[in-house]
Every structure is written in C-alpha cells, then in structure tokens.
Amino acid sequence: MLVAGIDIGAATAKAVILKDSRIIGHAVRPVGYDVKIAANEVSREALQDANLSISMDDLDFIVSTGYARESIGFAQKTATEIICHAKGAHFMIPTTRFIIDMGGQDSKAIEVDSEGNVINFTMNDKCAAGTGRFMEVMAHILQVESMTDMGPIALESNDPCRISSTCTVFAETEVVVLRAEGKERKDLIAGVHKAAASRVFAMASGLKCEPDAVFTGGVAKNTGMKKFLENEFKTEFLVPDEPQIIGALGAALIAQTHAGK
Image (tube, rainbow, N blue to C red):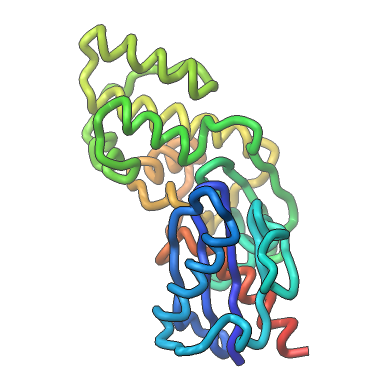
C-alpha cells in the first residue's frame, strides 16, 4: 500500500511517502509564491527519494494538511495540522505526550494521549514572535547565515540580553539598539532565543507539559532553541529525525487508514 501526506505550510512544503507503515521517501522545499507548484514539486521530489517512477495519481491515497491544504487538487482528503502533528510525533516517538511545533509562521503546543490523539492544544498564528520567521529576521540582523547556525552561538552565552518586546518589529529595534551599545553577539543571539522560548512558554501555559515532550518543526533543528525551551518548561525535549516532516507524516498516516478501508 502506497500513500502520501502533503503539508503545505506558510514557508515550506513537505511530503512523505509511506509503504506499509514505513517511510520510504520524503522531501522539504520552500513554498515560494505558488502553493500548487510547491505541492507538485515537493511530491515529485518525495517520489524520487523513494525511488518510485510513478506519479501521485498512482498512489492509493493522499491527504493534505497545512495552510494551503484545500488547494492541493490531487489529495483525496484534508486534515488539520494539529491532528497531523500529533499523529506524526506519536509515530516517531510513541511515548509522546506533549508537542511544541515551531514552524515558519506559527507555533503550536499540543497535548496527546497514549494513542497519539489530541487532548488539548493552543497555537500562536497572529504574530511572528516565537516562530521561525522571527528567528530568521534576527539571524539576518545579527549577520548569521541561518536560523539554525544561531543555535550553537546562543549556547556560548552566559549572559543573554533581555529582549522585552513580544513583537518582531519592536524586538528588531531592541536588538539594533543593544548592538549599538556594544553587547556581545553571542549574548544578543542568546537573548533572541530566550525571548522566543518565553513567548512559546506563555502560549502553552494552559496546557500540561508532561514527558515525553517532543519538539518539532523547522526551528527544532536549532540546538539553542531546544535548550532555551527546556529551561522554560523545566523538562527535556526530544527531537525526532527530520522534525520538519512530522505534519506530512501524520497526513500520510491518515491516508494509510483511509486506503485500508
């Protein structure tokens, strides 16, 4: 049985191909301007990764998720990001009970039960603070090549700068001012991480963070953010292999269920 999950987020498109509950191919690429082109391209790349010389039309079932899930014409069904992230995280780490997902334009906190079903959730989708976009803006200001590259630098700091604003635009101004005052770059970068982690912690304050806690999304590749989240939540976060594809994986798992009916 061959199925696929497609996750078209605000910043990246992800696709996962499953064969009999095994991941045999996946891909991640920027969305760009046209979400339909992004969906077609990321699907093609995932099929290539799986060494399959077929088209998406040849698969048994396809489920789409993410912001643009309704725009993916070749998907037979859509599913919400919350459900897909819960199922994907539970598949990768069966002991998952709590998930923080930091994507390009939103962050989510999800409580799940022992079967990977959603108990409760909350999300920040109105402000860039506490998201990948926030980290990318700060990386540019602080002249670090990528958001991920900031992580090790943040971990070098023993005195993170205080970034008080919860707005990306105002936080950017704060960082510029602190930089002009001669603050060390590692302390500025650590301050950025601490501010983002604090924002996520505040968002998730109404949920129970119980082991095992799992960190997913593109920002999960940033080792500094993992550490600062652990400081805020007072718990260890596990990061699955390829944390960006968890939503697409969950969608593929749902597709597998429907294909088996």
